[in-house]
Length: 388
Image (tube, rainbow, N blue to C red; front, side, top):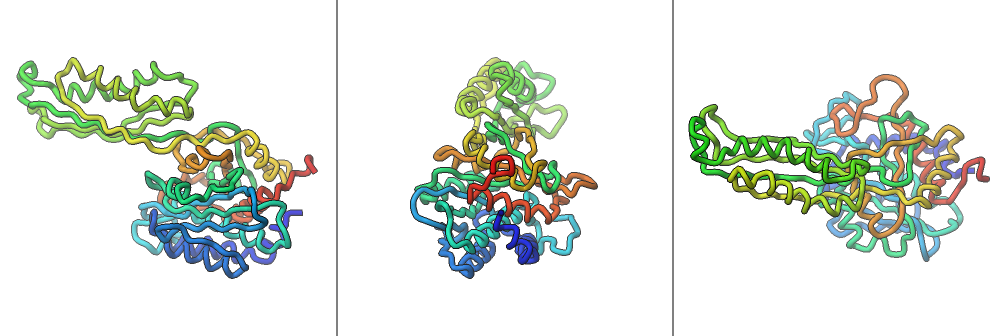
């Protein structure tokens, strides 16, 4: 039996209250002081000894015997986005909201810690990691890895809200479940001139247009399409007058891939293609290629452990899930130890599936209990009925 069941029966109202408190008071990356205080105070109240991370936000807390341990991670920060849900617990902070579900992630892990603390013993050590600054780059995962949070950890796991899955479902897959996400900024320079005499200057807008179409196209011919690599421009800026060739222009966009080896090759490949496309134009340029996060690649053994925990919810709980093109800095932990991330269904089953990172995003709070049950089962190594 999952000990989370009895705790949820007795404390389900606390679970919702914690989530609504965090949701109503969202904090941006590396400013999660109130959220950190809530986590610390709650864990101390049940006899645990949480540690606040350098910088004053983020919490790490060990439970159970010393020695090798598994880690469970949740992220804490909100987005710089105004909320339009109209919920009674809506954000009270102008221009900031929990539109990605990190309030739920923190609440689920906090409750899991409380449940584990109530047990007389654990089969092995567990480390709770409440991470700040997931929504920025470089993200808080790098800070925590540098602070040693993975010392002694043999596996690490995380849940992420998924509005495409119904409450009661948890999705997971072996291999890449998110993508690497890099940013490209290309700045172009020319002498400028009159549009009646393009032959006397370097036509910056023509050069810019050439890169807009050529870079994504050529990348798709130079990279294996099975790696799910895609390059998309998000902003194009150049010129003001219809009869003047501008002197400056800028392109910004993202490059994403689901393959770790391809991610390592993308920066020099982008530099090479841009140089080749622009060489005949005479336009000068600088490429600022900013590497983001690697893809989250779920380890097979860690995934099977997660699947067993999901099956404890019932025979229909385990769901398939596709690889996402989004980035997630949980991937930095997986550069050091094996682990897996799963997707927690938060859709009510009726009405629109409101996507994350949107001002209308909210979740069915029944998903909180599902998350606690899964994370507790995962920490204890519980199996589903067919494995019992």
